Image (cartoon, rainbow, N blue to C red; front, side):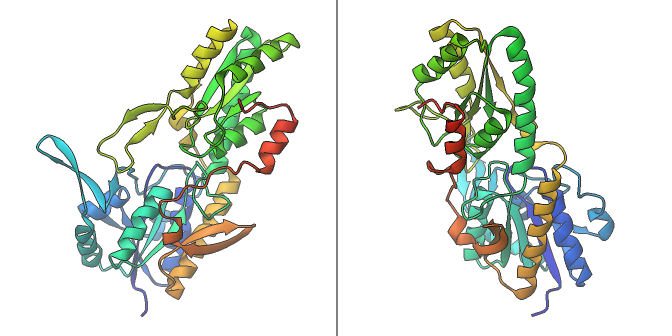
Length: 361
């Protein structure tokens, strides 16, 4: 069947490179005579029937633009959508509503750009009969099956730059500086930014830390004349035998846990144990912002092109990945509800340890 019209949406948290994918998908489709419909604010637009036709001018000059021209939402999962009833949030399956809007718009297929949560939602829509191709994005780099996702390189660059700047003020004031970095349940962002900036201690979810050992590293540096310490702490890092630090719970979200607080805990405890003045910094959403790096622009463009190759062939139900340097695809169901974490035998961990970096274990 010849394709006449496809939809495209960006789901979950935003990240640099989304517009580069939109551009690649839309221009490829338009060049083949296929109409492109933008869906506003991710799955929320599908649920609320908010669609907008995209023309060539709409997707021109957006390659270097951060964020997403379509908007995004990380709270709208069609199979588990929060609605307010009797003063309480209740999760409902609204996939029938989504299918109705999908058919009303005359869509033959949908390109879904997002991370693990978005792909899990896509898997449920595929079960309901929709033709979907996925494109992986996340600054966390935690999508199972792909060695890399676009947005990660830009976030590493941003976090590394922040750590570099903290380095100079930590040196001036002889302080321990603990920088909290995003990444949720995977340590890729904290690990890569920490190594790139020469952090003395890196705390990641995959390696539980002992606060006494973290403090000992700070004292050890003081004894050899290094009167400051830089600690890069992934937001999902936890103490041995403890739990991840939770900032708050969002009951209206299908993924309600919002992590946060590890940097303050580590800073407070290190100062208490060692007497060395300590400060904590939370980088937060600055890591999601700004224009994508050239590397992310290239990856996003390649992913968008490959997604349209799958669409043209009718190879639906698949998500684009990059494995061993090659762009390929795997079934979306293989990715759904999984998280790609840092293996404990990863070469970067070994390299960092060899250079004297502590992981608090």
